Amino acid sequence: MIDKNLIEAQNAALAGAVQDDYAALGAKLARRGVDIETLTARADAFGVAVPSWGTGTGGTRFARFPGEGEPRNIFDKLDDCGVIHALTGATPTVSLHIPWDKAPAADLKAKAQSLGLGFDAMNSNTFQDQPDQAHSYKFGSLSHTDKATRQQAIDHNLECIEIGESIGSKALTVWIGDGSNFPGQTSFTAQFDRYLDSLKAIYGGLPADWRVFSEHKMYEPAFYSTVVQDWGTNLMIAQELGPKAQCLVDLGHHAPNVNIEMIVARLVRAGKLGGFHFNDSKYGDDDLDSGTIDPFRLFLVFNELVELENTPGLDLAHMIDQSHNVTDPIESLMISAMQIERAYIQAALVDRAALEGYRASNDALMASATLRAGFQTDVEPILAMARLRKGAAVDPVATYRASGYRAKVAAVRPRVTGGGGGIV
Ligand code: LRH
Ligand code: MN
Ligand code: MN
Image (cartoon, rainbow, N blue to C red; front, side, top):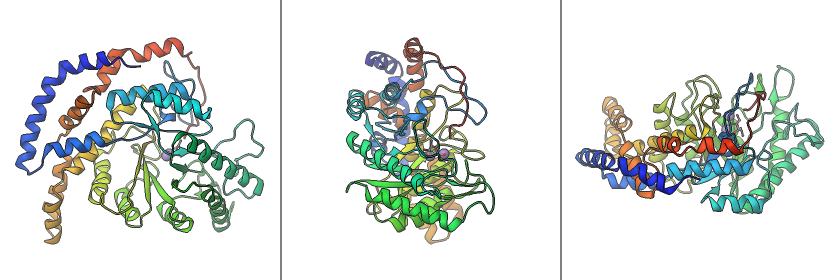
């Protein structure tokens, strides 16, 4: 999809500068007692999953403005994911959404393999109706008052597990829009009990080596109450279901100013953090590109993850979940993957021993400064070197633009016109 020779040629022009910057940063970090190669090895091993649905232009509740050469189906989406991974070297897996990405498993597997991609968690969808379904989700899905509707939603999730199993996925993410719009519309308790019963049935269908991630979200599309509205409810769910159930934290699913990094620490302590949907947000579930609004918060999340990385059993699924309205989704996803990696490496270079010392002696100022030293270090030479060494692009966006990929696919992918909003 992207000519290896183009990547090499573009890299050749930048390699000298990368070497110089890398040597300078290496010397600077050495003075702080940090070995740059250890950090580069971390960057090299880091991966985050691309959401299949993020490769198309999203939309708001008001409108959708399609871009050129939008993927027509999951195979086009996988091609785009292959481009993102070839250029960044940081996105080896894709997270699928069913039924949006429904296709014969053998074809999905073969396509992913040809692109050097694997599959991360499967996402089920019971927040919208499909043309052929018997029961509507207008008033809920897994927590619906009607048993047949709940069963339909359960069956859909079991089918997602089945598809996932045949393509090598190991987890199912469940997010539901169920809730209510008016006080009095539902019983908080009975609705939650119904949800738990349904999820238990799904849990019962998990293969031995699978996990289920429940994803909380404060509001939307339900605007008065949501069944799985926060990490407290989410933790209750994971604890009641059993060891294969964990919580998924989507960074955009909290009230403004909520201390998400602290939620992360609490869930790790409970052995119940399963993974992330990375994005950034200013007001609500904005699904903006990772690290573009509050990069410090992203850093603080990774700071907890690095601090707790030796917690027994910790096995996190890192996934992006964004909606791109005004950019080329491939460019946004590449920048986001690199922002997430940047936050991770900045967290990894924090002097943990010094931090512990300042904490013990209650030196708040130096503890804060020690943490900030990580955030304020420009680790780009490390990320660029990791990409250079693995044959990805030193400057992924520039190489992508030079490749003319979007124009090439636009020639074979018909222009999508208009389209309503409504993507969550
Ligand atoms: C809900 C959500 C969830 C969905 C995705 C499309 O807001 O974050 O993860 O699966 O958006
Ligand atoms: Mn999400
Ligand atoms: Mn969301």
